[in-house]
Length: 283
Image (cartoon, rainbow, N blue to C red; front, top):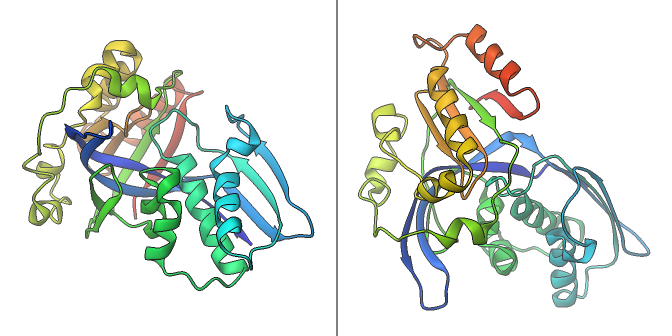
C-alpha cells in the first residue's frame, strides 16, 4: 500500500495560555497542502524492515514516528504482523509543516487497511494522539479549527480556491522548544474563536486579520524569516505568514491581482532557488 503523507500550513496561530502540565493551549486553523508530501509504502512481510530515502532525518530509525506508530499499534492489535516500510522524506523538518505527524497518521491509516482493523477515523485519531498534538489532524486531513494543544478539531468549510500558494523555507530550522522559549500567552483570539467568522475565511479581509504569535519571538532569533515574509509581500502576496512554529513562510497570491504576475513569481523563484518548496494553486 502506498500513501503520500502531505504537509499543512497554519492560518493564524494564537498561544492562549500555559497549562499546568507544561503544554500550551492554542487556537489555529490547520489547512492541508497536498502538493508537498512524503512517500510511504507499507507491505505485509515475514519480518520488519524500515528503509528510509530522501532528506536526512535527524533521529534514529527507532525514534521515527512511523516506526513508533507501528510498534505502538502492533503491541495493541495482535492481528498486525510485520511489515516492510519504504519511506522517502520530502517535507523538511523543523519547518512548521507537520511532516512527521503526517507520516505517523498515514502509517496508522495503512495498518488499519492492510490488517483490516476496522478502526474509525476517531479511533485512529486516538491511536496517533500520543505521538504528536497535530497527528489527529492528518487523520481527517481537511481544514480544521484546532484548540487545546492542537488536538481538539472542528472541521470548517474553507474555500481558498484560485489562490496561488508559495511556500519558502529559509536556510534555518526552528525547534519547538526554541519557539516556545520566549512566547507570552495572549488569551483567546476574537477572530479565531468565532466559527462563523472562520467559515468566511475566503473573504481575504478576514484572512489578513490572522497573525502567528510565534513570529514575534522566532523572527528575532532568525531575522531571515521576517525578511522572507517581506519578500513575499513585496511580490504581491495578499497574505503572508510563518507556518506553525517555523521556519517555513508562505504567501497567498491572487492570480489576477495587480502587482502579482507570473514574471514576479519567477523572480521570487530565482531569488530563493534553493529554498522554494512549492508554488501551487489551492483547490
